[in-house]
Length: 249
Figure 1 (cartoon, rainbow, N blue to C red):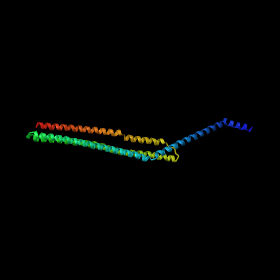
Figure 2 (spheres, one colour; figure 1 turned 90 degrees about the vertical axis):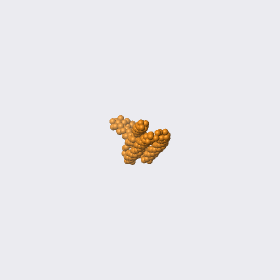
Figure 3 (cartoon, rainbow, N blue to C red; figure 1 turned 90 degrees about the horizontal axis):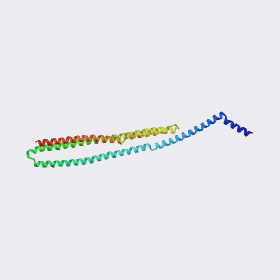
Figure 4 (tube, rainbow, N blue to C red; figure 1 turned 135 degrees about the horizontal axis):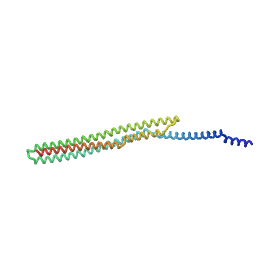
């Protein structure tokens, strides 16, 4: 009989409105605990992720910056070596041309009438003055071009240092903030840390993109070539005028 009464009581409990509410509350509590467990698990993973990000972060950034420095130094050195080689070839060619012209004037001096000797000397002086002026002007233009390239690379290096320092500071600030939240069991969004890392990285890549240098170098090269073309045109005219003056004499 007792068994029947107990069974009936349990049966009525589960069918009563209050029992329905109790079951609902019970289920809701289970869901809350499950949700809390999930959140706790996610927070734990996020905290582990933050620890991994923070491990040797500064040394990795400094290592990357040092690698970039070495690469920049190598490029600058390679450029200077290439220019030195170019100058050596150009100077050698200039000496050959000068020697050839001197030989031609020596032959002319032997075959020219005495009364034209002074005119020939004036003509020769004009030729070598024009050559010296052309060579000096071209060298100055080249130095100007090279100086602009080296200055750009130097500024690039400074900008690179600033960019890496900004990247390191901003990310480290977020890491410290996140680790503090972990220690205090506060909620934090690891996505913010990862977002700022991506943002800072994109900023570095944008500021230090190789296309910027290539565009700058190409612009300066075209400016140099145009200046050299003008110098050569002026030289050709001076030589032409000198020849005409000599012939008219």
